[in-house]
Length: 471
Image (cartoon, rainbow, N blue to C red; front, side, top):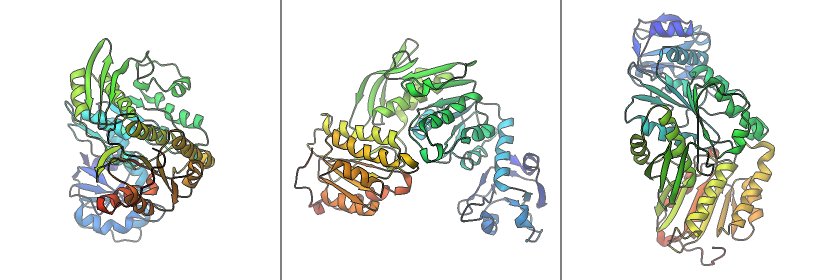
């Protein structure tokens, strides 16, 4: 809980109007701000949050305003507090730092190229059994979203679980400078945001910079590239987890990948317990091990870990298994980079051609552009087409200019479409009962529209697909 006095101390601001009171959190959205929250107007490339101060004042309980805006507005705003600061974004980050300094519980940072959000939510599913926590919500893992989530800390908060995203060098250092994490997990190193980094090595250096701030860490023991890039000497405990690396401390064996969900034997320090997860895919077994590693570092036993992992139902648009009209959809439309794209394609191969699915249908990939890859875009998309061809995927619809290279590499039984709506219309005409369909692409491609069109289409309208093509 933040008082006006606290905010003035944290931001070195000035109380322009109103009286001291306590805020429950900060908000940057005048449309959703609640009574008791402090409005922080953020200035973006195409908007200025100060334009919405009047609406925010009506709904919320106070405002943090830039001095430039206050210079042109009256000083009497009524009883609700108005605090003047030089830079509202910097002030929001200062408030989060102030909260962190007063917070005595563990702060968990979740970093890595893929699986961060699912891993974070798995961690929270376990920790919530015994602890009160705050977490970064949705994709709020950057220099605005993370400190905003931190303002929700209350007097009875036991732990913070914070996802840390990055798209350029220095982002992790900046986020750690705000959150000061003591516990962390790095899920993996993959080809993410190469437009901002320029090389995979620089991605690795950025993610591994988290280690400078920690007192204990969990690392993916199966990711040899990540482990090979660690140059610092540890003076804190490190837990490794993995499936393939037999030297990892937390492992999974007897893995049973199902059409929906997965079962595996979780082993650690001579103990083991059977997990029946609702999450599909081998990569989610690895995410579960990452969460279990963090929970073990925080003192949770295997029974709690089992209960937390098995209770988790997944994250929206992240490899959801859906059915419609007798077809199965692997709906993984939140984001995409070459590493996550390969993992999802391999799950399509497994579910459509490895004997797991007995429905006798075809495999169909509907894939949108992978954005922010810079000079790597062309080869990365061509490789997608080659991977689909290598594994005998039946049909392929590529969405966007970049996926045209993948379509060209794949050849027959493929089509290039400009928008996800066009791809959804095509898919609705061709899909039939028993088919297994992967829908994936970068967030900017809005691949969820494909699924929306499928949801609206009636199975009896599916008149395409008489040619068998590849199975």
